[in-house]
Image (spheres, rainbow over the protein chains, first blue to last red):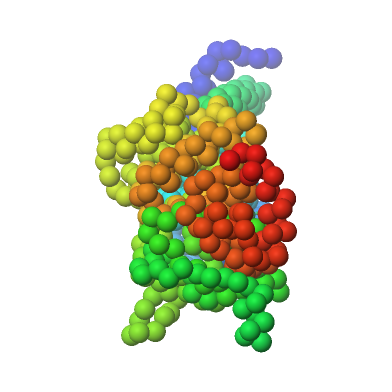
Length: 216
Length: 277
Ligand SMILES: Nc1ncnc2c1ncn2[C@@H]1O[C@H](COP(=O)(O)OP(=O)(O)OP(=O)(O)O)[C@@H](O)[C@H]1O
Ligand SMILES: [Mg+2]
């Protein structure tokens, strides 16, 4: 049933594809973190049109499927002259999609910082930027690390969708190997285990990070 | 009409040549609620002014407008000869931009009832953060200043702990050090002992008395501690329903007030004051 020799022989190929999966996840998540924060700022803006447009954009992205967004970025944008590699398109798609979720998470974290912290910052004459950097974000982010971590793992598990825009991530690689050799059990099982192990490692890492940031 | 108002509000303001703070017909409403009505108030440099009055009379709002946490509905607040919320353009006052407000605001510091320390920073960093990033002085110099200030409030041995590890009284003393290290010309203290257990009130008031005695900082103290106000203030202001109803030296206001509202308000505190002084 299970062929160890075969399993070992396909490992290099799978590990290589796993690198693609991991790159897409990490880059996509970084993008989502940054974009999500910008969206959260835009949404809080006193300039009403900006906050309304941002709200609409977030709602729109959240209520359409990630797959449709990936197709749009990879197949429609080139018609407007924007050509992207599968990996770039995938990172942008994942990042954009998840940024809308993360923006809401940031918002909750920011809203949870007591008003007195803003007032103390004003009384000390901090600039807006300094208030965000020194006072608000360091208090807003640690409590939301677990939720952000869940989105990170969620994004990791969404990466097989990128095969739809021709990116050979690890699950697609397993499928290709299977279709060549007519043996699916080893590649698919190995990929499943890879996802399991990495998700587990991530969640442990997130918990460590949370504990570290919550020292005070 | 004029005469009635004068009778009702015997507000005899001292004449101050060059006030550091000057409220000029300052009013504040929250929606339909008129919280402060045409306040005129001058404070001399170095003066210690205590503000008393019953709950909801507008004391906190008076201080918050000076700290720019609340915008006056009308009127002008002058700080050291400059309008705080306005800018003078061709002799006309127009709403000021953030840059102007920040510059004028740098002369004001505030201590809050709830301390509002930064919980994620050590005590030392709570006190050095603003000098470094707002005044732009070096870390070494900021730490030197901060340690000196923390020593002064008796917390020089707590530099590396977090606010949550301190008692309320200690936290409030850190908050005082944090405000003072910026060397403001004017310090606002809004009921800084109200959130403290009774046995911790003394240590905080002692620190404030010491600062007041140095005479370098103008202080606006909102307080329910009549004995303290009587002890430290040069002038006591009684606010009632958004107006300054009576003001004068502590011995006059606390022992011989003329306005019936002041009397009524003080009767609740007189016993306490008499027993302590
Ligand atoms: N942001 C706000 N929005 C609406 N109403 C407010 C606001 N801040 C204060 N008020 C109202 O303004 C009035 C005066 O409040 P303020 O806090 O200045 O009184 P205070 O004299 O400091 O009272 P206390 O002794 O209880 O602290 C109160 O009726 C209060 O409810
Ligand atoms: Mg108050």
